[in-house]
Image (tube, rainbow, N blue to C red; front, top):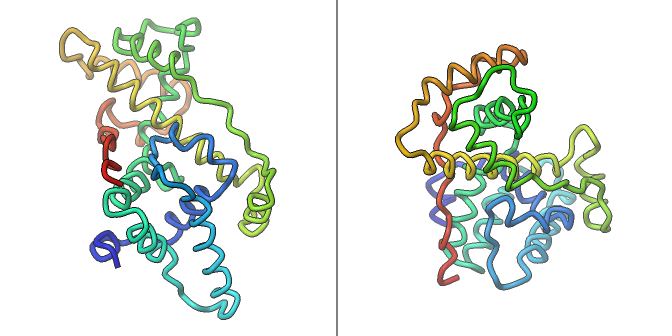
Length: 241
């Protein structure tokens, strides 16, 4: 058992969703856009699928068994790729991947607030603070790609059928949301760093609150801009893998 699984709880639904999504051929082109670094030695996805298939076989033998799937994946990854990768994967899964459980809700709402007037400001009702104008420029330079949602490969089609995925419940929406989250967080960091002095976030909050009210957003979940934890710096964690 790895140190991760000894010391941390691995929420079964969250990590099951993460590993199922990472196994998809559909998700492969967007791995780096989600700020995840896979080991340079292939085949990570092929081996992950083998672990998934093993647990499917065990589940078929005893449908009522409570099998520690996520722990087994981390145990396999630790033995195959080492502690650096396991820590990277854990931090990414806990702090970056958007799984619809409330993580990143404030960022999601602020991303929408910033975009209400258009990244070019053409729909603004009131003049935004300078920080928002800079942030919009940063976001315009890194648009979220159009994410394919329809399974094409046999593996993807089978997983979609097993999980009951459709247009309303689709793992690629989580991929798109994760990319959007990362893009906003990186753009926010760069916009803050581009300011000549520490920006007055109170003014930004007042402006954003008015925009959110106008759009009928849930104000209790908006939070103050920058109140979210920064995007973890995961660069270089695979060194020596």
